[in-house]
Image 1: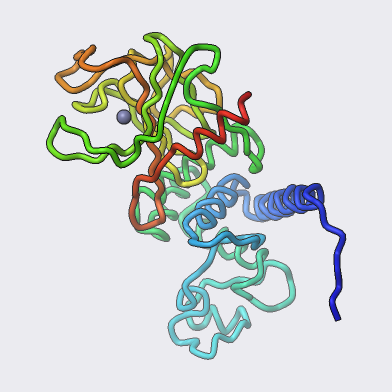
Image 2 (image 1 turned 30 degrees about the vertical axis):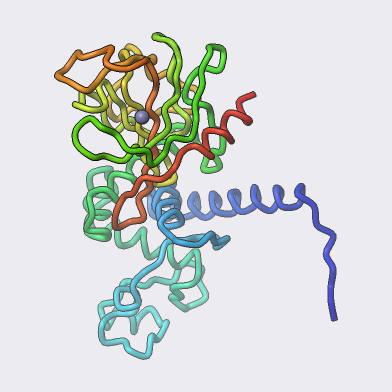
Length: 307
Ligand SMILES: [Zn+2]
């Protein structure tokens, strides 16, 4: 028998905001029990969702190695918490059904909270716990950054975007991703060049944290922002930075980072070796490595959204 459900984009939107509310309720509940702030669980969950290859609509995306959850000797994967503990597994029962189920959202979060509390509840303790869990600096950094963003905006459903140069000024851009570059040997152009006059405001496209600022031989005065989707946004050849902007600062779409220039291709301060433009690049981290991808389709989309 075929059942047809009435379905509209409005329903899809309602379902989506619903999942964010359910997640937030679980994070807050885990905070109430563990005293670990909700945004750390939210950031870990977000990180895990964004390293997965395929989109999923799981409530919670944090996952555990079965050996860590059940314990090395618990080969039958018995979900009884006492047996798991006997076998030195970490799995805990969070929803009170007397099972520690690695597929249950509350059990997952409760287990994660317990693992963190082995180190302690402070920010530094959490950083150490994360390092021991992931054994990778970039994973820890991304999660700590995302937690900072969630904390500041008190929300996990942050979907706004902006175009990286002010649309009140004249600008133009084409898809030049993958073009060859002469300076500095054979390099492939990893980004999109947006041509605009000196001084045109450069804006953050996304929610994130400033990860890097300063001079680079090719990029001139550049800035790197790590967003909440494991993506690094790279802005180069700028004239300068906004006053007070610093590494570690949380930014949102539309925040002015500085202005368009033509810096780079030489020692610090070199400028004017090419027409003024913003070089904008995007790099995705999959939990193992980072690679460049074409920002052009995203720029087109954000330009439409910002109009
Ligand atoms: Zn470029």
